[in-house]
Image 1 (cartoon, rainbow, N blue to C red):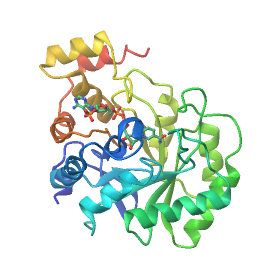
Image 2: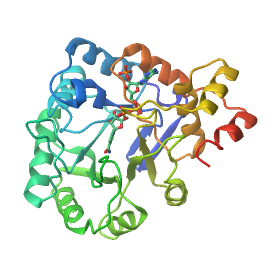
Image 3: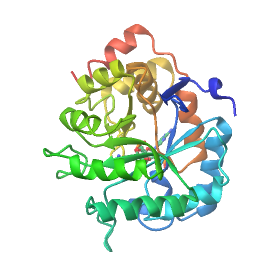
Length: 292
Ligand SMILES: NC(=O)c1ccc[n+]([C@@H]2O[C@H](COP(=O)([O-])OP(=O)(O)OC[C@H]3O[C@@H](n4cnc5c(N)ncnc54)[C@H](OP(=O)(O)O)[C@@H]3O)[C@@H](O)[C@H]2O)c1
């Protein structure tokens, strides 16, 4: 695998943890609504193998995708894992029988989820585990309150050697600072894209600290990004709104790591190519008006 050849280059989350800024989010590999198996398991395996083949060294997952299904497909497709590949997972929720996502942040629940991830991925130690917090009506908004208890539990699991590095997800700046007072935080994963820019200040402050910011829903997630400006810039550059949205994120800050999700090899290739799209200053200025 040639680390430097992917557009966007690499980012070091820690001395021994460098990933390509162009990564891959595995959530789309489970069945509809991220529940149950995919219609075509071989296709899911093919997407993962293509991601690694293209040089991607950062895969984002969770054992509650499926549940268990996505991690089991990752293991089937890629185990034994190449040394360069880093799988980042998250804990803090479960799935109920209806496909709901109840939170699960009690110490024994977090411990069980770490072991579920280890078992289903076929690993002895997890590279990075994000504590998934947040909630709200959409499930993707930070909520007020302390995260000290669950994050301390993860820090203990880290000290036990089950986790190398810790991150947090769907949090506000105060919770980032609280977590950092308990144990080092190598990445923050929140909802952010060219049309949803509530974390601009947080991104800049994490960049100053050398901490990675990993936007989820970079393409809008379950509701694809819709913006006339995005469309017109894409038309002007002879590409797609998706490509522009990804290129804009890479350009936004050097600590931003991309994990666009797709269940399609063709889309995966498009997304990797998009990371190499150069955005001229005029188009960049236009894009920056979207969420102004
Ligand atoms: N921390 C958290 O709470 C949290 C929450 C949500 C997601 N995540 C992570 O973030 C990752 C990214 O989020 P996401 O997958 O939900 O949303 P996303 O990357 O914003 O968008 C994925 C959607 O875009 C489509 N797509 C991808 N590439 C495309 C292309 N080139 N052309 C047209 N359509 C394209 C996919 O459909 P196709 O399958 O048809 O390509 C899928 O419907 C997830 O995979 C997951 O790992 C984390």
